[in-house]
Length: 329
Image (cartoon, rainbow, N blue to C red):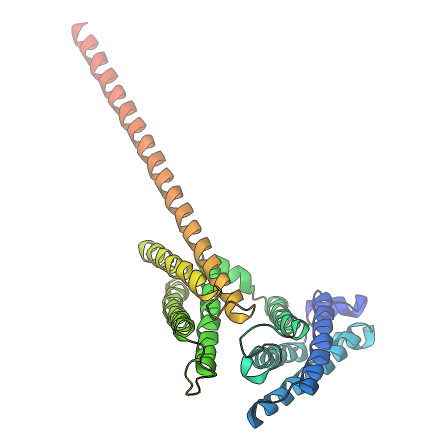
C-alpha cells in the first residue's frame, strides 16, 4: 500500500481531496450548462449535433466518476481503495483525456455551445468552468504522479533547464492561437458566400494569427526539444528568439485583438494571444536577468583577478627588496 493509502486508512483523506471536490464542482456546473446549451441551441449540422451530444455525455461521465471518487474519500473503508492506487491513476489519465476532448468541443464556434460564430464567449459558465475542470484534471494527475511514483513533474521541469516552463506555456498558447485562427478562417474567410465573408481586413488579420501561431509553435517546440534533450539551449539563440517572438506577438496583440481583428471577442484567441505575449515578455525579462547576472559575475571575476595580480606583484617587489637588503648586508 502506498504512503497516501496508509494515511487514507487513518484519516480518510488525501492531499488531492480538495482538488477532487473542486473538480466535482466544475463538473456539475459544466454538465448543467452543457445540457442547457444543447437544449436551447440549434445544431448547424448533423455533425455538430453529435458533438453537442458528446459534450453532454462526457460531462455526465466525468461527473459520475468524480462524484464516486469524492464519496469514496469520505469513508475510511473505501478510501484506501482509491487514494494513491493504480485505480486512481487510471481514472486521472482517463479524465484528462475526456476533459481535453470536452474543452475542444465546447470552445469550438462550429458547435454553438459556449462560443458563438464570431468566437465570443456566449455561455460563461460552460466556457470558464470547462477550462477550470481541465486544469483540475491536470493538477490532480501531476499530484498523483508525484505521490505514487515520486515523480515531481514541476520540480523536474524547473531543474531540467531555466525557462523551460515558460517556453512550454508559450508552446501551448501558440498551439491554441494557431488552431483558433485556422477555425475562424475556415468559418468566416474561406467561404464563397458573401454574406458570411467578414472582409479583407478581418481575414488578413486572421491569416496573421495563423502564421504567428505556426511560427511561434515551431520555434517554441525547437527550444523545448533542445532543453529536454540536452538540458540547455544556446543562450544567444534563446534570447534572440525571445525578442523576435515578443515583437511578433506585440503586433499580434495589436492586430488580432483590436476591434477589426478576429480576437476582439472574448474567447480562446483573445485570451491565448495575450497569454503568449506575456510568456514572451517573461522570457525576455528572464534572459535579461541572466545576462546582467553573468556580466556582473564577469566583472567580479575580473576585479578579483586584478586584485590577485596586484598582490602578486607587490609580493614579488617585496621579495626583490629583501634580496637587495640581504646583498647589501
